[in-house]
Length: 316
Image (tube, rainbow, N blue to C red; front, side, top):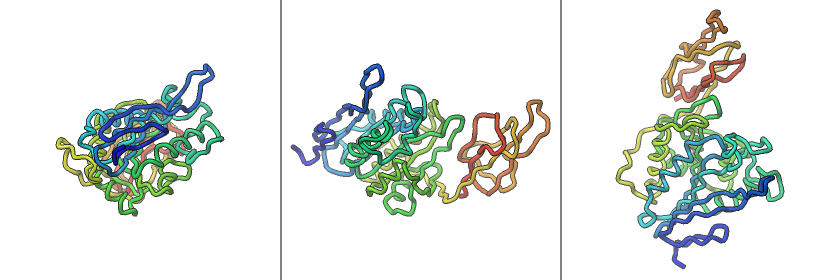
């Protein structure tokens, strides 16, 4: 076997090869087998092993398309190292167009998982054992939750030198220093010593062309930074704004919310971001920024209740 042969779940991928295979997860009540689809692009030379994952939340689709475009663009014969891509991690949620697994568990709160726990726990354990364990770096792709949209952004531990270097290379409009959340893939992989970038962009159940292109370009830039692959068509690295604090602006009353700002817009403290009225357009209540910052997310559902998080601002 060549120096860059890799074995995952007893599948042997030789150097210069692209292989797609499935890791069995569970059977549905109909006895239909549900598997985790894995694509490995193995370069001709040893190097970093980068995992790409999407649809941990089954309704977050931009990452699925991002990975498809990366796989269609990278030539294994010009690759140094390995790409391990899982474009649909939560296959159950993907089929149902749902964020969650059939038992309503959030897969991204179930890591590192166990062999004998819930379905979410078993799936998380499989991913850690067969994907993370064979990787040296990771990029996990997400969108906003349902009824929200996100500015393309990287969330990562910016205090870690390697992670920070990859985050800067990605070149999203914004990178946020974010602590890991217990039970998340990023938290568990970081504890295993893998630098991880989490990419957030767009909305659930929708393709966002700009968010997809930003993700494709960003991943290719990271691969260039890691000396894995050089794509001559990749645009130059874009300088990212950097944030370490973010704040949600909440509705002070229930009603119909009228948004007056855009994603990526810089705002000043006390600036009016929108307003809330009743169903008849009366009793206008201003929604104001609580900090100087940039708009990184907002609700797309105009019907709000008192206390709802409606606009997310990052301090830059």
